[in-house]
Amino acid sequence: MIIEEHLNNPYVAEADIKQLLAELRKIKAEKDIACGHLIIQLQEVQEELRQAGLPYDHQSKVIEATIKDLMQEVGHTIKTEYGTANWRNGSVRVTYDYKALDAIEDLHIQTVIQQHRKVTEVSPSVNVEVY
Image 1 (cartoon, rainbow, N blue to C red):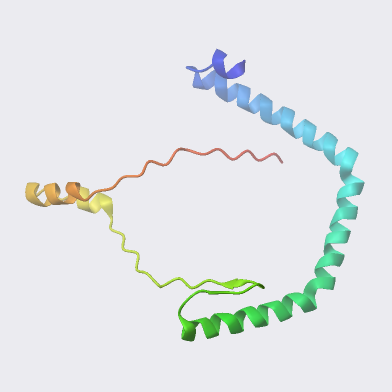
Image 2: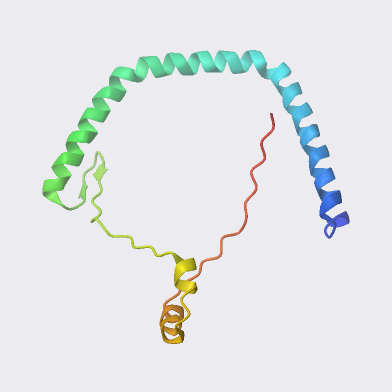
C-alpha cells in the first residue's frame, strides 16, 4: 500500500498524492461525460422546485420571524404537537490572547495563568478538491 511504503518519506508521499490527484481528475472527467446529461436534468428540476417553493419559503420566513420576536417576550421553550420553539438564554464568551499571556514573565502571574489554562488539541484535517 502506498501509505505504508512511504510513511517516512514526505517527498515520495507528495509525488504519490500528485499522481492520485491526477487519477481523481481523470475519473471525475469520465463521470462528467457519462452523467453530464443527468446532472443538467437534475439542475433543471432543482431550479423548478426552488421556484415553485418561493411563495411557501416567504410565508415560512415571515412566520418564523414572528415566532422569534414573540419568544423574546415568553423567554422559555415552547413545544407542541406541531413543532418546537427553542429558547436559549444569552451568554457571554470571553477569549484572551494566549500568546500575550504566555509572554508575561512574572512567575507568580504565569503560575496563576497556567492553573486555569485549558488546551484543546485539534487534529489536522484534509480537504481534497479535484478541478
